[in-house]
Length: 356
Image 1 (cartoon, rainbow, N blue to C red):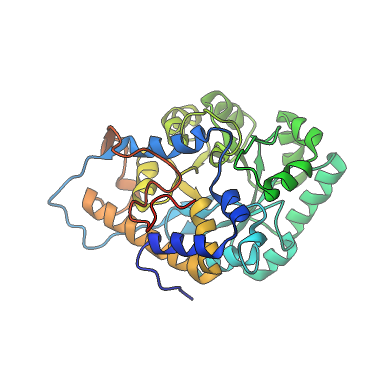
Image 2 (image 1 turned 180 degrees about the vertical axis):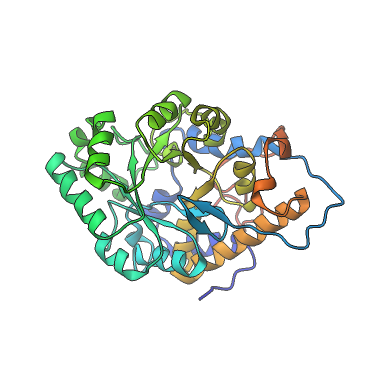
């Protein structure tokens, strides 16, 4: 199962042709001035590699692990809200690709089909992402379903007490905004974390949306298994730092007591290698995944993952490492970016530049 693309440029151009304007803006847009969205990309572009040479790189192992589960590459499929709007089979498409490629996918609370149907689609480990959309009884019922469906872990999204002001206004965004039960999201606290832990028992819990080392340290104190660095792809609070800018401080705060993943602007294999060098266990892709699904559903997403794998392997070989555990902070350094950032600036050969 694989679509034929030579590069990700081809895939993105096809996605733009396939998707209507509202869906395209939902995938590509950020909050207000989209500064957070652009800083995610700029932060990645501020990092340069420091390669070693004259090393035997004939055999390169791109595999990683997350919560004890093997990943073919250190890339997981981020939760996508409303994925059914741009993928033929909704959340079943990324689930099928995760099974066949060898990675983990996240299922959003606000997507279709049901969490039970996705669980039954394939046997590989998958993670359920929680948006709190009701009271404790609502949450208890949802978590009971997640446990019964045998998800590998749960992740609580913690950066959405208010719905971000996304000004690429369209009917899709307006409908989403009006349907958010805001009080339930505003009331999420560390008490909610404890309630979830008590309800799911031994199931690992992640927190998605951590952007401060103080909150990462608190997560460790509360027994959270994974800290997920994320500014919601720049779609919530505008004018945050880029996500990878927070990585080193959060790695220090966690001090090896929890696994760390990061998302936000990661679209190339070089981006992934930078994150691993700075201490992340894996990267989650959102926009890139959505573009792939919009270009051609599961086959296009499979091809996207294959292209990422090739880029990661090539980068590792050119840096002079043969496994991810050989990467470290010495492999990278600060540098000035050479392009103005936006959501597609990692793809300079798109036929019309930035596709709007």
